[in-house]
Amino acid sequence: MKTFVNLNIGTKLAVLPLIGVIAIAIVGVIGGRAIVSLSNGLEFAVSEAYPEVRDIGNIDRNVTKVHQTVYRLLSWSAAGVDEDRMSSVNAELQSQITAARDAFTQMLGDQNLPGPEREIAEGAAKLYEDYLAKIDQVLGMLDIEYTGALSFSWSAQSDYESLMTTLAELRETAENRMDVASSDAMAAGMAAQNQTIIASVVAVLAMVLISFAITRVIGVPVKRLTATMRELADGRADIDVPFTGRTDEMGSMAGAVEIFRQNAESLQEAERKRIEDEAKAAEEKRHIMQELAAEIETSVQGTATAVSAAIEEIGASASAMLTNAERTDQQSENAYDASGKSSRNMGEISEAANSLAAAISQISNEIQESSRRAQAASEQALDADAKIRKLEEASVRIEDVAALIGNIAEQTNLLALNATIESARAGDAGKGFAVVANEVKNLASQTARSTEEIASEIANVRTETVLAVEAIQTIVASVNDVNGILKAIADAVLEQGTATGQISNSISEAAGYAETVSGGIGDVREIARATRESADSVGQATGELGRQMTGLSSSVDGLVARLRAV
Image (cartoon, rainbow, N blue to C red; front, side, top):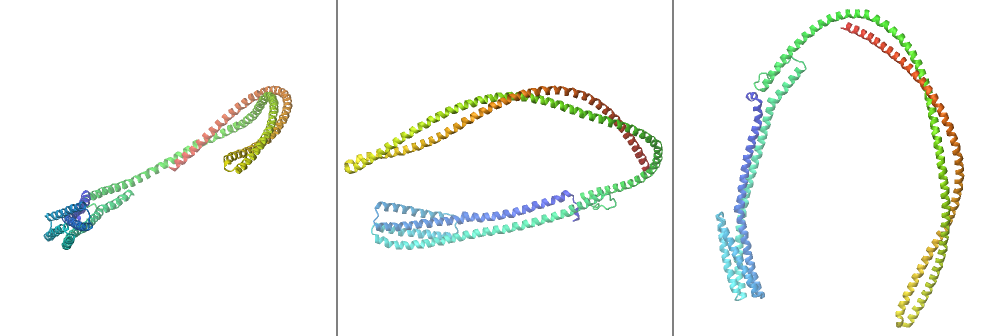
């Protein structure tokens, strides 16, 4: 174990894959043996046992066909079937006999056929030949006498049954041999499978053990060395470094960590000495700074106090001047804004008055045009009223015509009815006339219905016409009223336009006066603004000087405090 621990990490890590490769090779060898055993068993079953069973099946099937064909010949002969069909069946029988004999020959020619089964097969072949001899007797007697052939068939039946019994025994023997071969192959496969499973389990356990061992000899030392290095990083140099006696990579790492520990211990000692030296130098520096602070506070602080007092007086005067300047500027600004607003309002009123005059003129023109169009609409409505009245008169005439057509249809219907009655009295001679009379009656009925529909539609037209006449009369009256109203509006608009022109001229003169006043106030505002800016500049300069003196005083206080704190 100590030798394994001292091996280098590469060798240790190579052990696990090597064991895995060996385990895979062992499992592969065992699996290959299992596949070979199973393949041999299946090859035996396919190449030897199965062909024998297949040949026995062919023999059984062909012999059965021969026997069935013989009995078919016997039954057809008894039934008196014609010679051509009998010859065809006889040829089929000979083909079946040859096929069965070839199947026997193929099975007996198999070199892999075992001795006991070969003896049974040869006995079956001899029984088949005996059976064929009996069949020949049956067929020969069939050409002479059916009863004799039937008696010979009983002997052939006995040989057939013996042959089928022998073939069944031969099939059972072959199937047993195939079952034994298959069972042996499966047993060999199961044994190889069990061996493979055992080998795989052993290989996995071996790899797990090796992995555990590698973890113990590599992972644990790495973890402990990591903890040691973390303690060194935290500043602890009074610790023991493990694994310094090992000769592998862990030992080299432990030696390097030990050097780090020694260097850290030396650095800590040097740091303690540096802190002591800095403490001594700081004490000497603090004493010197205390003396310097006292001198600065005495000489600078008095001068700064006097300058600050003078600056405060200048600032107060500048502030008062700035307040007065701002008040003047604000008042002039308000006056300028008021004057500007008044001037703008006058301008806007003048423009509005001009626009109003133009709008009134346009409205007057449009009212005159509307009056003209209203007069034209009234005339067109009167014309439409006359046309609709003519339409009403025409609809009355159409109603009269429709009533006349209805009367004619009723008379035609009565005549057709009389004709139908007369044709019925005339008997067969009047049947043709009855058909014509019936058609005339139908046409008269259709004409009467159409006339009623026309009369109904004309009545609707008359009703709508009356409503249209009333509506047009209402429109004419409304248009006349609108025309009168438009004339009154036109007169009022004309008077309003004259008054609006006078107002526009007066507003234009007032706007000129407002512009003159606004210009004077603008000059006053500029002077007040310049005064305010000058006062503001003085105040800002005074404030900045005061802030600088305050900053100087604070800087001196801070410098003195820092010097005393050193």
